[in-house]
Image (cartoon, rainbow, N blue to C red):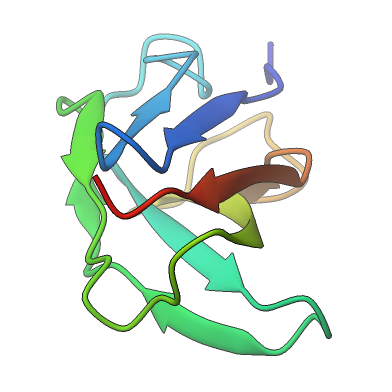
Length: 102
């Protein structure tokens, strides 16, 4: 069963967490990537591919402006074809955080 993925990114702790560590059921051979967008929806940063066995990743906040709200999305992608999955990419819902410059 394909699961949805959830993610949270925190502008204070500088950590993004993927909520479902197995979005492709028992398949752990996948990567996930964090995408940050500015207020206009323009992509401003993305992480490198993060192994599916890792559930948290730091965000690079050096390029962000203090007290500004950003949106984020996480995408998980299977590395190999998996029978029974119509899509090999799962997108999280879009979330937002404010960079407080702590």
